[in-house]
Each structure stands twice: as C-alpha cells, then as structure tokens.
Image (cartoon, rainbow, N blue to C red; front, side, top):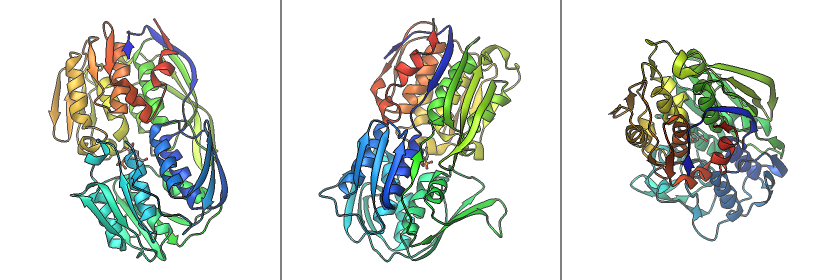
Length: 440
Ligand code: S3P
C-alpha cells in the first residue's frame, strides 16, 4: 500500500462491527438455546475464524454480509470436530474457545498461524487445568490439545496478567460448570464485553468490587447457566476508530464524524488521553445497544502537532498501559509529533501480541526518522519528529500496519506499507476507508 501525506481529513464514516464484541456474540449465541441474529458482525478475518471453528463444532450458522444467524446448540450440544480447529491469527478465538472446549466430553486441538503458534497460552492452561481440564501444549504455546470434562470444578481465580481473554476463557468454562466461578482483577479492569454479553443473553452474573479489597473487581457466574437466544447489534469498533481519530486530531483543519461507535468505558481511555492533550472530541447520539454504550465521535482539527504545550510530555504507565494496550503503537506515532514526546512503561504485554509491538513500533519510527529508545516494557519516543515517507514493515501485524498508515499521512513524501494486506485480520478495507476521508 502506497500512501501520500494528507492536507486534512474530512467527512463521515461508519466502521465495521467491534471485533471483541463479535467474537463474544458468536460464541455465547452458540451456547444459547434457540436462534440468535447478530447484525453489524465484524468483517475481520479473526471473527471469521471464530465462526468457522464454531461450524466445525457442529453449530449451524449462516452469514450474509454483516448479518450472522446462529442456531444455538445449548450447553452440552457441541459435537466433536473432524480435525484440529484453526484459529488463524486470532488469540481471542483460541483463548475464548479453550474455555468452551474445556467443558466438553470430547477432545479437541486448537491451532493457528505462525504468529499465533508463538503466543503464550500458559495463562489459560493454568486456570483450566485447575478446573480439571487436561491440556497439552508445546511448552505453553499452541497447538493446544484439550481433554475436556463435563464435570469441571468451579474456581475463584485472581488474574496474574491483566487480560480480558483470560478472564473470558475462565468465565466461559464457568458458565458450563456446576457452582460459582469467579474472576478477580486487581487494580486493572480489562474490557468487560464478555460480562455484558452474558448478561444480555440473560445469564445472571455478579459484578462489583471485592468485599475485602476495594481496588479489586470481581465477576462471577453460577453454572450451569442455561440461557436463550437474543438479537445482538454490534457497535462500530472503537479500536479501529482510534486510527481515524488520531489522524484527524493531528492534522490541522480536519473535521470528521464516526457514527455508531462502541463507547464502552473499558475501551475509550484513548479519548481521555487525547483530550488531556487538548484534542477537540465530542460525543453525540449516545445510547445503549445490546448492553453496550454506543455513540458518534466528532473530531475537530485540533492540530495537536502545533497546539500541545512545549513542556507537556505524555507518560503512559501502570493501569493506563493496560487500558490503552491496543492503541499503544498508535500513541507512539502520536508521541513522535508532540513537542516533548512520549514515554510508555509497564507494557511488556505488547511484546506478546500478533508481533512484538514494542520492537516493531520502535523499528518503524526510527526508519521514518524519529528517535526512539526501547525498554523491555515500553519505549521513549522523542517528540517534534519530521517523519519522512519511506518503506515501512507491517510485520504481518494489523495494528502496526494501521498505526503506520496514520504516520504515512503525516510524513514528508510517499510511504509504502509492506504486507499491508494484514489489516484484514481486524479491518479489511481500512486503507480505502481512511483514503475516503483524506484531502490532499
Ligand atoms: C482482546 C483483549 C486484549 C486485546 C485484544 C482483544 C479481547 O488482549 O489486546 O486485541 O477481545 O478480549 P489481552 O486479553 O491478551 O490483553
């Protein structure tokens, strides 16, 4: 993909359905009784992988564009697949399905592409083994060979890493188990789409703060929980919107509106961070859809490159790094444009995403002419960089390709993003949609 610098962005757009919410809608609908209709389902390859695995487990589902109809199999209604289940590039597919499969009375194998087969799975193996499932792996990495059991033990589990995927995995296993399964999150609350989707389907859940530790959040499910099909409308993907918001906030005189975006507070820290820098961002038409907050986001050319005060340096660390985990490569690009730059710490998890996102971000920013210091758990980007258009690697990682698609709009001269087709993992058509707002 070749990208030329932009003079400004203007116009309106609607983005594909949220990837995290689409995975959950499909998986929970598959365990429900009856027929669920899901609209605005994510167009991502990741969510297509989830649908294809569910089909292999005997779930009857039909897809027409962004509409998906799922005939729920009910708890205990899945069938042994003919072979290994291929999760493609999708960590969410693998970790959520592992929770579902741990409670089946047939064995399964979960595998994926070269990137997914390098990603850490001990974080789900450990709690599922505690519940009584048998799981073999290649030293904590996929493929996972799961020997499930219909009589798993309900557990209380304090998350050792802040991960919504691990929380969801344990809750999905707990849903099918006899007793109360609880997950405790200390200090950091990860995205809560699983809890919201389970509640939308009528599962009774307890959520709130821990009685002994005010700073800890707890969510619990009482299994086995039988529940019925529902209509679900998936909001636009906030993590996709972030790229458009960043471009419009950085480039002078831009004016864009993104309609019907998910505004779940566990996802929107990025808006608060940009607002703290002075970005003009307004929310309109706020409402709830399928138990998720939704609204439109308007960004008025804040020209952050010029307006941020010289001394204002941005440091992202502690719980903020977890809340911004998917936006950190993009924030590093933004940081290169701020007068005093950006520091990210406590973000070691970024090294275990679709690629090592700390190394990939540092490498690309340096290639474009920015000064970057890499730490084991983050990076420091020197600000006020004049990015130069050049050839940039995607490292096969959709969020790296999209973050540097934004950087290319800010650069002097044309850039080329190599392997840009990987954006289809979360957002096929990303570059075309971005281009439709760009004026030169
Ligand atoms: C996701 C959770 C996050 C996020 C990923 C999607 C989810 O991963 O980075 O893009 O849908 O639950 P972790 O749970 O590993 O932090």
